[in-house]
Length: 120
Image 1 (tube, rainbow, N blue to C red):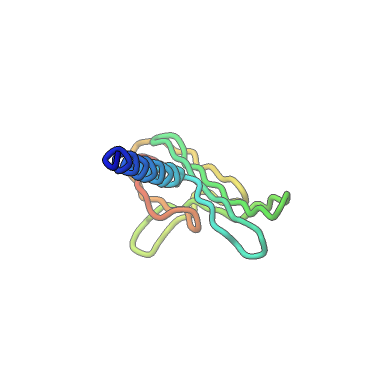
Image 2 (image 1 turned 135 degrees about the vertical axis):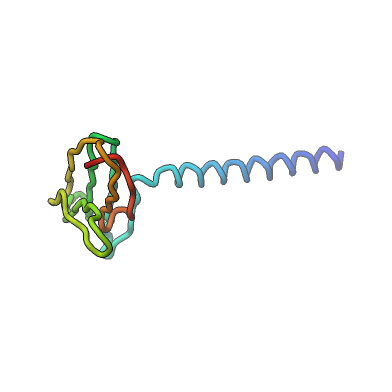
């Protein structure tokens, strides 16, 4: 009887850890659209997407209750150390359409760090 209780307790602990890890994996895989808390009961949502040889898109919005506020967003291409060229800018959503002839380094300030993609 004692062994059966111990086995059940072990299975329950294992199940709890599995559920917790699954929840962590689900949170980590949602990274393309991170949610960042902002002051005053508002939250800022930002995200980006890219397809090699086709486009890079980015978005930034602040939500305060039912109010949606588009925020400035830009996509920048690396030219040389300390020099970045803005290839697309706007508020809310922007898209940079490109071809896939060579690798370039890009960044999207306040959304993601640097990344490389076939896009020129």
